[in-house]
Length: 429
Image (cartoon, rainbow, N blue to C red; front, side, top):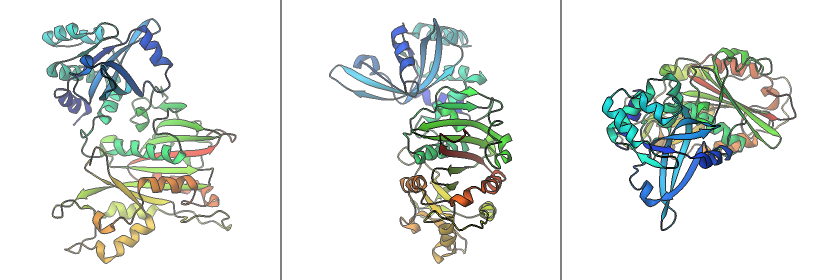
């Protein structure tokens, strides 16, 4: 089901909101650091009391003497005083046309067009739409391909709407893992973002970005073996903290509708380690409700067969708890408490689990049971700490042989997220 169809159903239960900023509010928004990612507005209770959240909102903002429309998600309203409530709005993404008046002109139903025109608020004011008008408006927005990225972003902000993690969700999760391992806030804005035209990338969830058809051509000569996935790269983002830089690349390996997960490659030049994570889905047991299982298949066996690191001649001088860079992240397919619950195990641990009697099912099949692990795994925060400290992953000497590792993953399935952390004084990646 497409994003527009799912969103249209959602807003018919929780109607959309229209907001028009005056020049003063618009200027303040443009001068804010995080405003287009996380915006809060304080208004009298009477203004927001009819809003059913979370839902989508359309904002008309003044920009250099003209206007620009944005699609966003109103996620929360909280009373902050006797008279006022605070409305939280996330992920403002530009759409066409640039004004609410012009958007109303694109509505195809005469009655809906008249209703929308009557609901357009004055500058500085808010208005909410009817359920049917909200659904029709989403259908109209979806007819313009330039609005697809905004609709996809809005979909990602609506809880419990997507019950099944797909490649898009998993790629976003891999990007967030890389940012957390780098040691910056998850809502930090990147210094640069570039995305290929007509490409799908989890990096589109960040603020304004540039479309760049040749986004990786300049990088191929700097990253050993990176030319193996260069043609599939869809986006690039750069983050910075102190004297270090994190560069994240996303790369599709198959058409989006055929993807089932992602790989994350984290290259930490500061510590000299490489860590790779592959995603797998856990299915809820049919008989043992509440337990979650993964059944190994040929795809897993093929992936494990490719998980080899180059041999090195010199003895390593740096310390690792484990030099094997390969880890698996197992994710419950169903959203639980508005989040995807997950855990991680190393390749060695996975092989050990699958070889134990506990992995044998009642009919002789092999499975990995969430309950049977009984907490013997790494949680997200544990893994991030190990990556950041350099306690896991390849030794520095092995990291220089990166070409073979990247090539092995590039020839696999799904999508790839490559995160490259290095000192700023070195040549830029």
